Image (cartoon, rainbow over all chains, first blue to last red; front, side, top):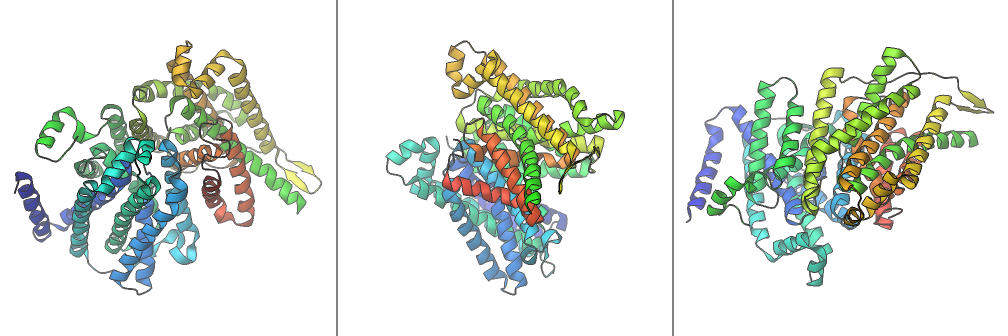
Length: 308
Length: 286
């Protein structure tokens, strides 16, 4: 056992025990944090490793949330509804990867950013299915602790699976595509297939997270799941922390969730402006994100949390 | 029925003209600096807001008032490029996309929050009436026709600027090949600032029409930026005039679907985008 394994192990036990000792506010806050980690980390499969900036990642979150809510209200039960949420998210990812992965670079980001807006409008318009702007309410009961454990579990699963995937042939192929798609193709990588698989895996985590979130929050409407707040999570958190490194989105999620919480409680005005200015400063002065800062790079690499 | 279709076409062309105007500005900016400007919609919103403030103070014709905004917004775009965009230009490919998204998105969030704090989050619109023209069974509002005329004039002016002047030719050269233009003695950095200024003027002009024909709130900026970005993807990768075509197609589609199924007009836009990408992955004129 290396030092880092022990740290991770102790941290996990701490997070498992925490809801029994801390106030509910802390549990709810940690749930939000883990949710942000799941979304940012699953975005990073496509955004960081594959090198396609998918700005519409939260569309999968919303699809999962709506599928879950609709099926749960149709008495399909928690398990089946979550499964369906994953399935619909993954199917949708497969469906859009054909037209969208023909686009490169900035154009891909633009077209996927349009997706969120499309789904927000669809959720508003398909009133018989989604309840339109008044949203969907699922059967309510107190489930904060259980939702916390589900989210924690999904968070560990996401991070663990991405750790394994990026060390597999699949992950290597993604990195090759990021560095140079033509060269990767010449070396016999089926680029379209690999890109499609990456998007499907990335979508599955996000849509399951959407389902869990709905289960916890009880009420969803188009603004909540397709709105800007969720859409900004992968963009700001993964990119702030450092895209393309396992630890990056986690650091970004910790940083932004905590700062946001402080801003919400301490500053009555301009917290969106402060958030915006913070993002601008990151873009201008920290191209690789927090984890690739000069003074942080060395210690992180020594701990084995960051590779070059 | 025929008169309805003609009216829809006129409304659609006008709507499309507004789209085309702002999207053209965005395509210019993207073509020259390769930066995805997510703050473009915010400049549109600011253009609408400022002309609203001027109109409320003077009650003159809002289209004439918009002439005052031109130098103001040129300066705004110029400074935006100097301050926020130029430091990014040395980055390559993947990193440039990330950095430009972060910077322009952050800037637009800040602009949105500050405007909604100082000028309030409520809807603002100019209700400026002019006598409408009646032709047979058709009624055409003359403010719309005047708006269309202004849009055509502005587009022609930009077109002439691009074709005839030295700066315009240098701008087109920079879009085609940055290094090549630099070797030919074009100051590409200065061209970048000027392009941002012109793009911002076009966005703010679209904002003036927007506030006259519809209403604006501080929150329309980011959804509009997304829409304009979709239009330039639809029009064609790296094609300046494709964005004009994309804007017109979108406007007419929205007007026609809006007449038959009002809720679906905006959704139709994105379906068209996906359909075009399926048939022509490089966009209409790409």
